Length: 138
Image (cartoon, helix red, strand yellow):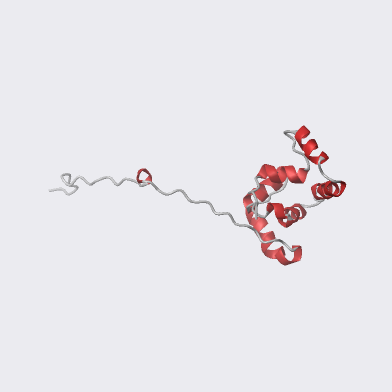
């Protein structure tokens, strides 16, 4: 299966319907679509506009192109599209947990990234104790 990990910009572009940074390229891509594809894209792009954060989250979570997006990216994209939203990765996880069956959500792809290994320079140094100094009084 070929997939890419969506970014906030990818999600916003898809759900706002236009690449605002390059409208000519967005128009050229739309012109290549069939009427049915264009109608589907239009319905998908406008389905959340009068709705709630939950409806937008549902649309993104149901989108098979977005199955590799992590919850933080989805929450950040929602905040871009709905600036008054107080969405977090925890609220997206909650939707998935509570609504998985009702919303008929596709299985998510979890992409793990390698954690950076600690190097010797990152290990804190311990000061050596000078045994010649004494704190006792004689």
